Image (cartoon, rainbow, N blue to C red; front, side, top):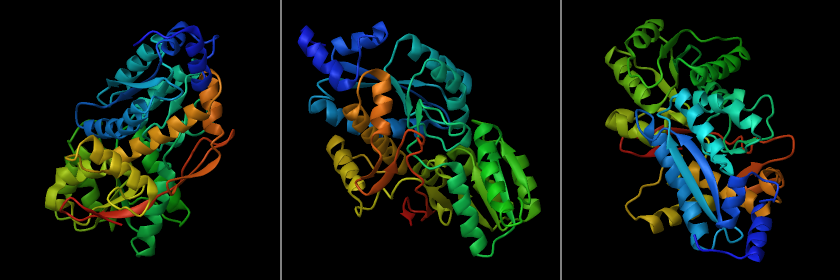
Length: 379
């Protein structure tokens, strides 16, 4: 980084919210004209596409902002560390970020991983923006340091159960990952069913980062549900759908957004036809909303060969929100928090968001989509 004089440093500090009272590492970032964000995500392994695509979408924003001079003259640096979708690795990555005095955390991927990091970032008063998870355990109790861009799993599963029961499908089973993510999804389904005096007819589990679905298939197919709600990552969900169909199951499969729509579609190929997925961001193939038009333009400018997908669009939206918070914020990490809270209610290119001092869940947007079996999605 080029040297800057004291006056320029003070200007950067004011614009980015970097105060003289901040830790040495963060002050150094101001002097060097940069602001460092830390991301722990699966970049390898069975859930890798979630981390890679979210990161790619976010970089579309950060690269454009940096090319235009940064935020208040400071460049945004997104530092990503691979956790393989394993909680202990995420915890260690978070400890490393904290020791390096990154300015904020961004785009953590997954419920069990983010929950492992939560006590560390809370104790350090480190902001975490846009974790890729809808777990209520990260929303309640309220945490001033954490901002959510996406709807919750309760929002998603409520819509799934409403959709299925309105079609007369009341015998609902659940295939879930055997961890806090799967439990969060099961809790949402159970809550939505209980409001209709119903309960899951059967539950099958799979271990995180595993495709050993035989026991779950046996349990769920035997219960003969009308529909199965899947709460797992794309590799295990694809394996389950294939195996269940092979075992003779002909009912409906319904996934929540964390599955990774494009990754699931790619894994299933033509067998994706008819598989349902809830989404928490707009259709990335449609140009009806301004945020998607912006995203598609940025994607094409970065590499005409890149294809749009829901996960990278979520990363793009999250980065747009973060940049707005940085631009609006006052001093230090508190300034970033204040800046995000100060966004209030807004339409980000047609995507509704709302933040306040008492509510850091920016969106409750959920819609139902169906995979077409040729790589497409129908809303």
